[in-house]
Image (cartoon, rainbow over all chains, first blue to last red; front, side, top):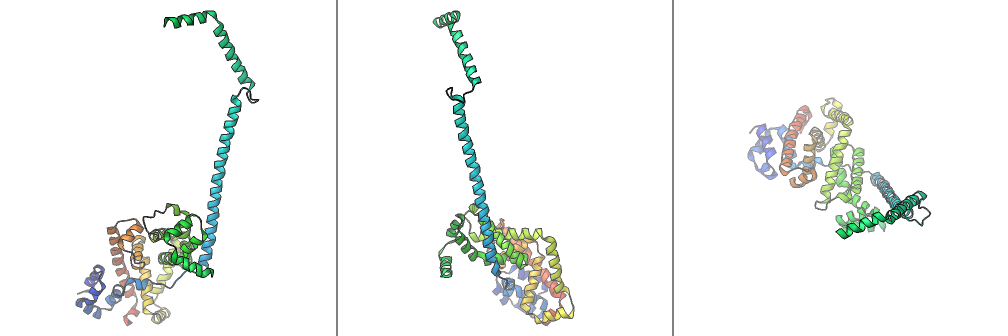
Length: 146
Length: 204
């Protein structure tokens, strides 16, 4: 067995105990320091060499909680802004409805003189039209024909 | 007394209960959640970033991100899977943003290995072989592409199955298998190359 063969076995063999039991592997590792160095990672496990003693510092928690409170306030501000915009919209709609009601009501002080004039003109035209004898007669004739 | 109450709650409250609490803006539940997962998140961030202060910042960002997007969390997957996913994305993005800085750091680290001065060799002799092997492994990991490195760390450091890793990385089972296999292939190459650089290892 050469080094390449051993590296291939290391890559493909998931079962560590099988590696230990393999006599060819064992005899190669006894001769070859380089492969023994590499094989340790596989036989002992990468996880052992991946462990580190670093842990979070004592300030980690305090800093995080400060950020959490800032974020919470930002969220609340966003929510308040949203509510403010919504309530503004609702108030505008209600205001428009009220104004519209008063504008359309002839008894209202908001009912414009111009609108009044237009309405009066229409009314007068209608009365003139209706009082026109010929028109009424023709219209009645038309109805009786039908 | 307050401390004892908190410890008791850590054991009692489930992840779902904590998430519901966080959703309603509970400071206490967020605090319990952080206590439960801070080591896991920091460990992964640190393994990817390799700088304690920066890893802490990124770990904090992970938790704030969780708070911000808690409504989007679908309870079909485990909370740890989601945390791993956010941690991996944040750490890799951080590394990309700070490429120049990481490069300088890498140069500084490789100096430790490639320098053959007596002083350095003495420090290597005095250092535990396991620590040296650990350093070599981490330095070799730095040379891997992010995807291979992440998959490798999730499997060998965090003990996640291929299926879980595929959930975290949003890829298929076979893609994860391939990533880890290629990571090992590359690691073998880098580890052997580091071994050859160091005559000192012939002593062991």
